[in-house]
Image 1 (cartoon, rainbow, N blue to C red):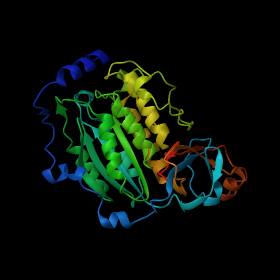
Image 2: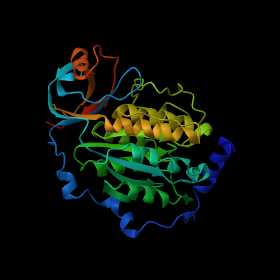
Image 3: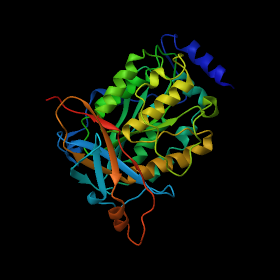
Image 4: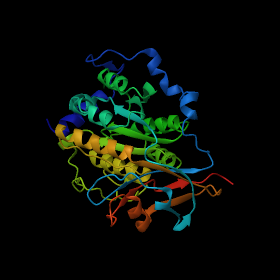
Length: 357
């Protein structure tokens, strides 16, 4: 099977109406499908509550050996806003629980790719802390809530096993669906992240990328895209190493920096890289089924070692760049039993959209 066969299948199936559901799994309940219109419950919102006035920066740190670093303290970090240091007024250590939303594409393209990405999901769930909460959304032409936040990882595994694939849909609205998910997560307090299992293909208007980019600038959700399609993608970027490297700078123009076809994998690769870079996550491009397990374990490790920093915003309605750095001498002192600090890589959002005056 070639990339062209997949593209042809997707192109032919998109106009079909009404949509046909693949019969591999039973349908989700009607109450589950209404989750996209709900908000997290009051008890969930009460945990790790942070003032909405703060600019919240979820941050992870890896050393030169590719291991994510725990045990750091507030004094180990500094935050630069537009190049000038801004005081850290809030700090949550890595041990605090996080909320992770998994967004799974159910388009015709994914139906052809089989389900290796779901079969390996145990590696992500097993790697999370017991107190971490997980939720599940799927998307095709829109996002659909399947499971609200729970610390019951088995419930998410069961929900993943019940996912349906849609054959024939008016649009592949990845950008709009992710925007919808970020809206839903905006009411969630504390440390939060989204793991995307997606081809990154989007057949909607380019303006929806602009809407998503603006939403990410105002969001404190860290996003980890996992690209589906393996060798069909013909990804030309650097091969991912187990050693962490700084993500590419967000160009802010992923929708226009690659081929014009709305179903271009090259365009999707660029978009997924930019999504990760803008939010402080990392993009993964598994080439084969065997790559999903180590990639999921790496994401779980990053989530277990994620810090939440808070700074006071300016009120000018403008976008401001953020750079989170380590004070090397303090970071080394915080690492017990280590006399010299290793080289660190810090992952954090690239900036924030300030509130209006």
